[in-house]
Image (cartoon, rainbow over the protein chains, first blue to last red):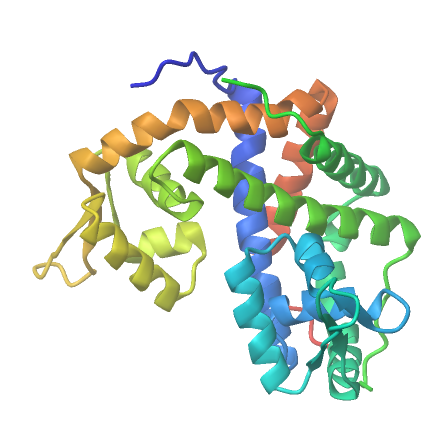
Length: 159
Length: 159
């Protein structure tokens, strides 16, 4: 089939990997459904708005936002256009400096995320943190940060 | 803003939650890009084919597959139609028993996943398991399984 000799996952790794994939798919779907039932936002809208409220000034360059969210360019541009139409964000062109347009949160966008946040946090707590011991919360942080470091490391092993 | 008094996340929980969200978004994007570069499959194709090769016989009822993947109905039906057109899977109608059609993997689908699997597993190992100690692998399994149990528990706390 192929010319590489893969290091297949052993039983423990397989168990961890399947549980992780299943958990993240189910958790994302559930968070999205509950958010949508409780507010006017999808999980993707919420992600965009969270990133825009974090930095001072409520705006980010589109490229920076794309890097933060790790979305493909076409998904990014379609999604942002829909959010602009709904009045949650606006584009601020910046022809002077040539480093690309900004996306800024509008007052309506700020109101929407402030209205959605309390219930969304309650959902996250109920589905995730209520289930975990303090040690498991630390382990979740540690494992996530290790994988993020690995994703950031520049080399892709040649195969 | 709202009539509930949410239990906001403390610093440790916040750190864990942000790292987890970021990690899963970046990891999914990266796995998808590498899979697509190394094979003719997207991550979604791969998921469908893995679920079809697992059970004996290489086929599942559409409803069962939808439950396993936790996809919305419209995404499911669009994605499966595209995979049928590409010859990776086929529909097997089952008018007799009234419990819905089956989706089955084709020989081309089986060949595609067998060709893709060695490199995909190597990618998973490089991005995830090479970064983790045995204890961290166990913690990943444990945390994922705890959250899955929580997602399965029937009650939604009234808010």
